[in-house]
Image (cartoon, rainbow, N blue to C red):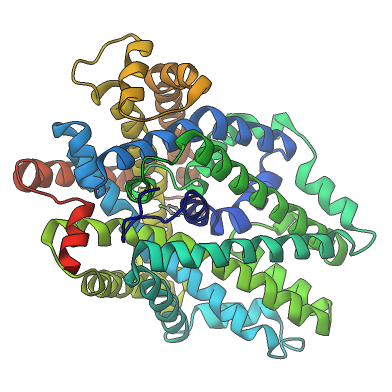
Length: 504
Ligand code: PFF
């Protein structure tokens, strides 16, 4: 790998950083309960298919777009095709929206790590979580600490910040996870019931909505459909094998999610089987799991600390990847100092996260809502249900159709030009070319349309209207397109070499 000051120093460094982006709350929290709620092993099967048929193709596309341009997301898409730079602008904005709620959850997790050693045995944890999350100051404070941690890493840059921290944090996370999983699998009689609840295949329960959920989960979990992989990909050199790296990242991400589910459901089955049915959403990780640790006595405090520290690590390595996208773009476009840009971006995200923390935690009597939604749900729906899938479709179509000078309908001609550009992929190349051009985008469009339709029904049943979410997302897209064509298309938007120059 070229030894640039600002790039990854090794393939493994890139793989661990991208895996760090992928492994997050989506794996340790969302995946387990989505499996149990959507048909167990049937969901796992469909999920793995989504990772192979859709996720890996989009991931290769995004890494490739960044790698070939060696530049921020806007410049990378622009370099692929001058009229597509707006996709890069969307890919900068969406992660920035995500930080504003993801760091609130990261902050909550931090609080549980810190509090693991406080005697919580006498307190009813459900109550203590409720009073913590609805407190006006505490969640904001922990969100701030979490953001500061992420900012320090990003300020240090790719090699000294992202790569170094990932090399330490990711192996640590995996060791803790394996330890906790083994510990939980030996908790006694109820483990089997917990595992059956987690994994018993039920295709009727899966249904089409389960398939849509699996695809959404795969996107979120693999950090696809926004600029993170483009940004990280841009810091890789010629030697990296995109196909191999993608395989490792997807495998690691899926493995972590699956093992987390084994641990969590074994523990619930053994120690609190009455909670199996309610092991969902926020309650799972912040109420039920702490209750279970309490039941383990003093050992529980250590396991609790390890568990939440692991979740903090996972969330932190994800947030740094999200923060990097905007920091990279602004640093390069406006030729500003990385540290200052990081500070400003973190501050903006932190300020927005304050009302989000109050809204989702229920401070001020839960009065902070928008169109009836708490702010976290609102931002999460805009980004994950609408913008992220569109970003992933955009990445595949860019590589499949628009990156060539003379696009042709023949996937093998496309492959040839992609290979000349250095996509590699070996024997897998032919399959990739057909997938990226036709199959993956079509599947994604189909599932996306059905998914949004399902959301209208799901939220409609709760008395909420989904239209404002779709309209807000469309307005965001329209604004990004307009901004791009007015301000960025014909202007210099910088590349990674700018960061090298700025240091001189
Ligand atoms: N993949 C992360 C998770 O599973 O929690 C979340 C995430 C990270 C989403 C980075 C998006 C992103 F760009």
